[in-house]
Image 1 (cartoon, rainbow, N blue to C red):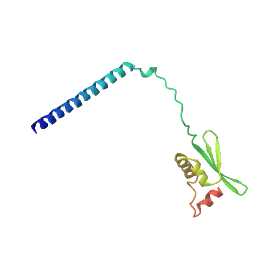
Image 2 (image 1 turned 180 degrees about the vertical axis):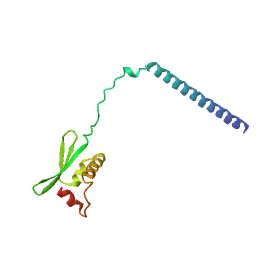
Image 3 (image 1 turned 45 degrees about the horizontal axis):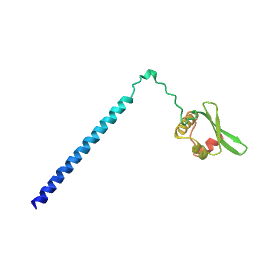
Length: 131
């Protein structure tokens, strides 16, 4: 019985020694990797670095004007951007699907600025269609 306990104690000490050796080996490998990386790193001043970036996506210019046009019986919403480009939408829903939140906020500011002196009516859709 004492022999088994002593054997287990020796095995536990051997296992602890192996674990400690493995830790030391891993730490030494980490130090070697860091030393290798430091050899390959070259410090470059900011003045010497030029980065040519290619944008992944470009946002169209801001909306500067809106118009409500009538073509026969159909009404269209026309949004005019800062670069002169424009796009027509057949309904308010299609227009809101085709623009992002920032454009909606810009459009709302334009509408408020244009109609700040008009009195609100019960039928807002009629106000937009008569303009």
